[in-house]
Length: 141
Image (cartoon, rainbow, N blue to C red; front, side):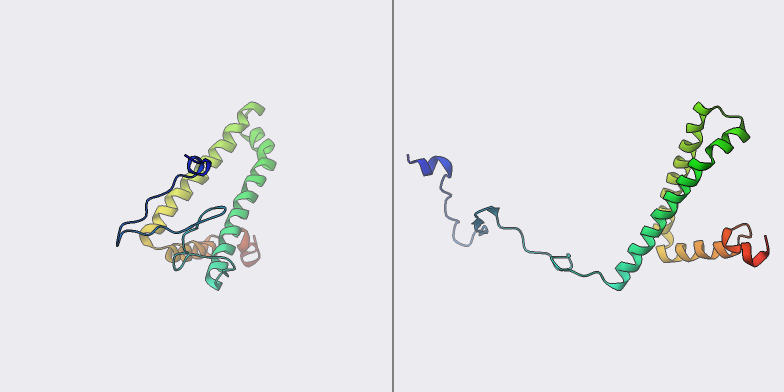
């Protein structure tokens, strides 16, 4: 037995009409060919994908801002509710759990009724809620 046989044993040739395996390259097996519709090298985003990405990034930014506002307001919240400094973690935890729960709930509702429809309903609610920050100039509050 030669040294080469111990390192890389020979493979039997495929039977007539059997599956043909791709040839190996120096760095390993040949990667599979890209599936149609799968983004490959140099693939560009469509306008719709850019819009969806922008909306998702905006939503994530708003969640981060909400948590920052909560952390700034925690001392005032604790004083108003009579919580000790050690108990303020429960306020942040309740906020995070309710945000996550509503995200899951409305994600499921969006699956059932449609993402676009739910998004438009959410945007229309912004216009009708008088206490909303966007309505300060409109209603004089």
